[in-house]
Length: 487
Image (cartoon, rainbow, N blue to C red):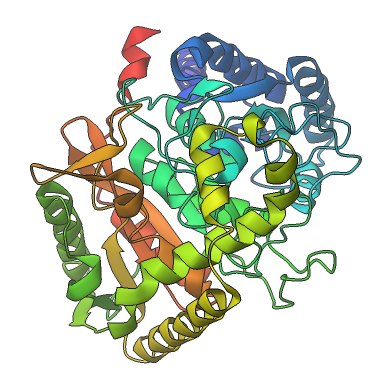
């Protein structure tokens, strides 16, 4: 009997440590903590797969193999000596290439900053280092984070692991593709009008934009100061909750950071949503939506109702001006940041973002201030509805990922402008600064669909728990991106 038991135990270890790149942090962390899995073995497996998949998805800007393997050996010794730090200790991750690493090139996936080297770590990088994360490299992005396709003119397009002819979304497209494919166990993205949630929806992963001020942006190259956020992009909701615990907290070096207590977000994932009140806004968030996306999102809402939640229809009249306010704000702030380079070396920008920076020179001070008045009104309306409801649920995107190089998306048989449509449902949470989570909720053909959960300020634990309840229904049915069949 003992021999059978040992055999079974050995087979269990083999199963647990096979296809490591497919596993989530919540699956890997217990193996690392129990010393069943070596951080060195895990890091090598992730790097091997990332390098092997790079010609197909083009997610990485740079690999840090030598440093990562050296760090993994150090982490292994810490764990062997009983110094396990927590969920992300020994987890290999690559980050978006607008987050500064001391003495490493941070390009913003641009030509202008192709040789830029920071002399300090971003705050989120410091926090991840302290938590024991092993950095495998930097990930591609839409140039200067000013776009949603990640079709980069300088470094090539990032490809969606579910369909290599499709965009991964942007601007954090490298993070979305790498996590979905298994080239990074988890990642961070940045979000100014949806740049965490758009690629998370398009690539079938979890993406969290925390409350504005919850996570320090010190050491992150800005796109628009008042709209920018940093947040987790992960395989599961629990992974996102654990990563938020690592990176959140006040930082006096970031003037937009807010000194509020952080929470134990993982402990809040009970999955209990009995009597939760879900808000639905029909006029804005369910207007002009792909029929298959709408069907999947409404079915997911029903699955939450089946678990004890309730639904209430709410109105947000000022949302009709949200796209204008978001555009004026982001154009103006981004143009101010890049004004000098636009004057001196306009030819070094990609055509698409050069046009946006030029457009950003056009709004007047009156336009900008009127946009802020609209912004304040939208924020007030959200504050009021959250006295009646616990969360607001919407589609993350009204369309699925489009073909690389196509400026249009298909919406119920019609061709519509891609960028105008793809940020419609994500932008309001940047204007308000409210936390918003995208979680997978199904498919249209072979492309994932995302559902967005918006909550009151600093209630990340609440929206994560709703996402966790939905995740338990297994909306992706254990399907994996098609790239795995081709490598």
